[in-house]
Length: 90
Image (cartoon, rainbow, N blue to C red; front, side, top):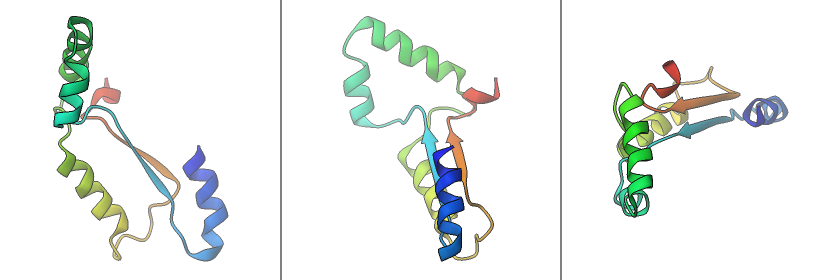
């Protein structure tokens, strides 16, 4: 909702506003933080199993940022893009 409101406000200045909402990111810091105890490990593993497209790599998010900031991409604004490996798809 925030990205939509901000996009409506910024439109008059020719500014596009989007948000990326990632879930699980495969990164060293993620593993160090989440694999500290058995409960956290089980929660992470369960969430990862729900991601039908797999856990995102940092490069996946970087590619999405590149797409959204490309000069040729001029029509996407006010969106919150869920980069969650398919978790929200069911």
